[in-house]
Length: 400
Image 1 (spheres, rainbow, N blue to C red):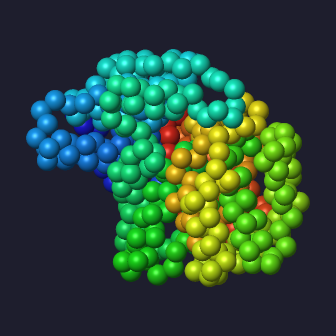
Image 2 (cartoon, rainbow, N blue to C red; image 1 turned 120 degrees about the horizontal axis):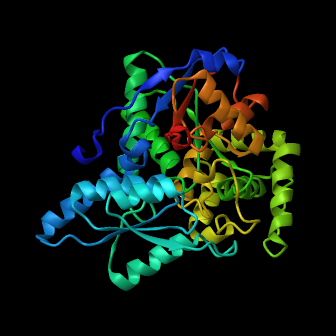
């Protein structure tokens, strides 16, 4: 990408023994570094897949004019879209929060993106940027250019290239991983990586599917909520004890606090159910529950209705995990866990990533490390396991 001064290329996968040692781990720790990517994050990789698809359709239809593109984002996705759209000669409108980082705003303006600043609304209604984005698509006939599979399936194909790179890089070294831990906001990254590993298993490039673990901040965790509600439904259908009761008609913040407390006090039940689901994934009880989730999605995934979300890892505070269903299937199938991250763990992980590696990663981009820390401390991930992480965003706060 001449205008960006860098191209898309295979990103490095490096073993990080100093980081592993600091965590008290004996197993190998592999980190895929996306901070040197176009605009400093993995997002452009997703959106390049979408641009290729849009261009292919335009050529097949014989369309001369290029339609206006639109995205909703709080930062890195908009920047990735801006770079890719500019390279393709497309006009882009980005629906961003009204308190968007001034550095990000300047970078968007530099790339010719039209910013539509949207104020934050009350929780429970959904992301106002996403709602404004959908309205613009319907009223103006613009094309979605979002980093989520529900609006652009092709961006999952673009993102899966990172997972496939990890598969092939490990294969070249005759290495394998037992678990991968991925930070989740809208879910496109984790869904893409999970898809790549599942495809690699089907094609024989790997012989065992690694456990796909995901994590979200305590400030907003709609996917973890869906994961636990899914386990509860499967437990009910299978006759297992699972003492989670979520009242959809009760005060949301109280129910969310109860859910978070359940993960701390009943971790043995969660572990038991996760193992049962992975071992019985094709059973009628599990498959009927998964079918129910597809038919009655609002019972498992709905807009964040707790307090206004806040976190150091603000880039993954999506009101909805848009790619939740396919990702949830992958997590359940692999025997992975969905973890609520304590804010102090996110901060510790960021500081450790900065001090123990040479990767200039931001707090959001390092939050998969926070997930590894908590899952290791709770015994879900053994200290001797080989684990893979994705450091996904460049730390702009360090640039003067």
